[in-house]
Image (cartoon, rainbow, N blue to C red; front, side, top):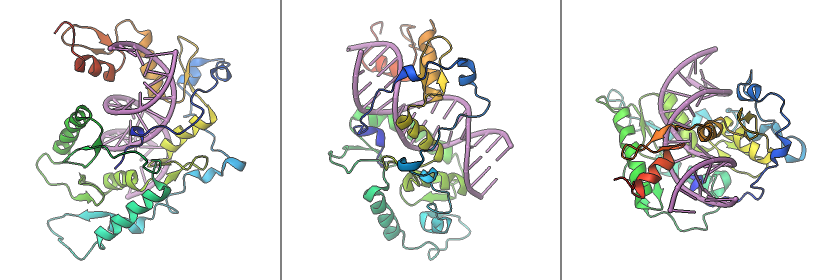
Length: 257
DNA sequence: CTGGGGAAGGGGCCC
DNA sequence: CGGGCCCCTTCCCCA
């Protein structure tokens, strides 16, 4: 599956107006809201609240047999699923025609592809990073017993139908932003995305005036206020606020190494 | 070049 | 079983 964050962003308003958000009286209430502060779904001309369609509308459960392969040793049932090659191709063409989160592929394809899951990356380093987690994932999925459900869009396998269904959403991308048409696998991903349109930032830093649309980004930001950061280089003991920074540090060669 | 912010993906857990 | 949320992770972009 193409990963949307590998393609150039096409949203225009990159920097929201922070001043609109600094008026929050109690930053802690914003950090730990009593209820998760759902972004208001756009209404009116920006679209209806149905930007993410209820599962019954777009996510047609009846299609499931066409989307996974039960590989149960008890029920081989080769005649069970539909012709999945045509199914998956029609589905992927559907993604290609607007359901995908990617812009219409003006760029050359990434040429470093994972042999396990077929994801593509633009550099060998990115691919090798991915393969670390991908192989761990395989081991997790199949520590000994063979998983029961296999995705028809990629080689991933799961030992529960629920897990597979969840995964398949990443192919079907049923949650569509009515503002920009971008599609997402889960409603809360769409809600987070909608905040990029509305500028809503419910997660405020208690130490400074910054606010964030995403709790994880706030968490990463909080590391920048900490003297000793979470991720430490084993060689030089330098600490970093993000694992990606530590990884970069290691890639570029720790000076103490 | 580096650090940090923004945006997004996905598995796991809980209800 | 499904939806919602948490948490971690990844990558891009920019100052």
